[in-house]
Image 1 (spheres, rainbow, N blue to C red):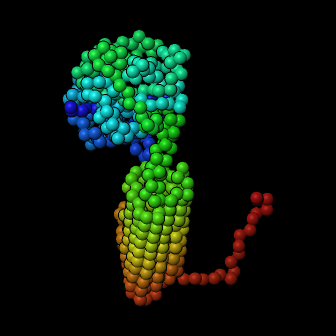
Image 2 (tube, rainbow, N blue to C red):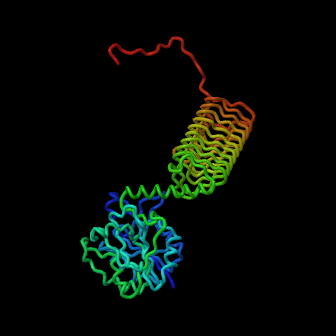
Image 3 (cartoon, one colour):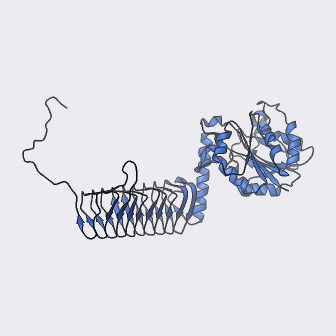
Length: 455
């Protein structure tokens, strides 16, 4: 039986107190709706229809490559009304309904639901809530089938004591949805058309079965910033757990954020407050210090990243050391055993094997050879206000402290650049090049003194 998926993403999210649509709020560095799309696509459905509201344009713009049809719910009249807008547009014989603000649901749980519930029955995904306040309680028949789901504001005191609640995820046949949904009324305290109200209607024709989630957090719905932060910590801990099963050692897995994809080798150590963004690869024996941010980097074996460093878009070869307080910007390639020290910034540059920039330097748009020493305070002056220019420093060169290399310029193999030099012409190989203002001393010079009464 073919499967279609409807995702409900029309909620206004007023409790978020944010101009950003609720389903676009970031979770693990991605919009929360992206997780629901991923789970849906993993089931290889015939089609996906997403119900959106006033934020339709923003939501569609965020997911230009997701194969999904968007249907607008012009009036927020409830979840049953939202599904009714979408069902005529789906093609599958069976329809799975998901919540756009429930990003923690796993593909495996959805697959189990679809496979476990007989196609002719209506299936409901439920869980036992530690605190069911505000959630719809699941009322069962003596045989275990579902009788109804009652919203808390409409529940009796005895019904509120029930801890089994609905996740808002349902699966049923398309023609059944088409028959039941127009019959759902809004005779409740909110005056809304609730999706769970199809259950009493369904029981006249079929059985309503529930599947309990083993992990209640999968059904965690996000309605405000507090719940978003709770979901974030759950997601991060889950990701850290998976990395620890791969052999990663954390100083504190609760102080680690993965906002993308991380692949790791053996014997990787990650200290506290490390953030990984984008796509990052860590080789064997990589050591990441505290308070480091790494984004879109490939890091080879035996690399050490010292605390408070920020790496973005770099490739770092085996044995290199970066930091502390270093910045690696996009386009950087550090060769084997390169050392980048404190307060050094590298941008769009290549540094060859065993080269060093140990402190207080900026290297931008440069090609640096092997075994080069870049002294403290050295900068490549790569930008003339309009265009970027390249600096080339050949193997075994030594650039003295506080030198400025005004690009385009080259330093020959084995050349030495004297401290304080402003280099505007190419420096020949194996020679000392010095370009400084002539030093002079003035014996009659008087140091200024404060005028009486000044502070």
